[in-house]
Image (cartoon, rainbow, N blue to C red; front, side):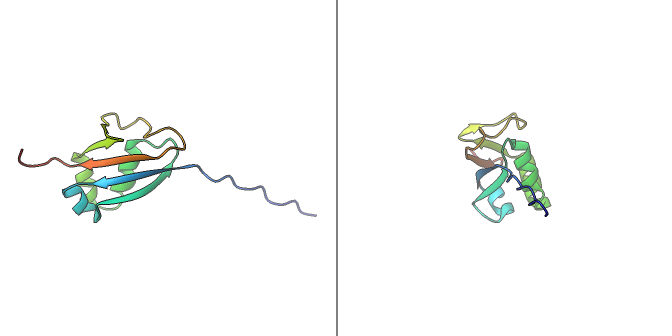
Length: 98
């Protein structure tokens, strides 16, 4: 008699609501989207996942500021949010004018 295969544990995921502004929206082809990442993902992980979609978006992401839950995120190596929570990230490229 064969024993059943062990159940695979599902990886916990974090849902990130990404909003793109100006050139970032143009490069992404959308104004907003939900992105699933593993729990504990950092802003750098999010940027890497998004940048892998193409050079135009990668370029804009490289010069953009990120707001995580309304606060500028300078340290991109910190987790986006606590495990099991959701995060809102705004991608803000430099704006012309003033």
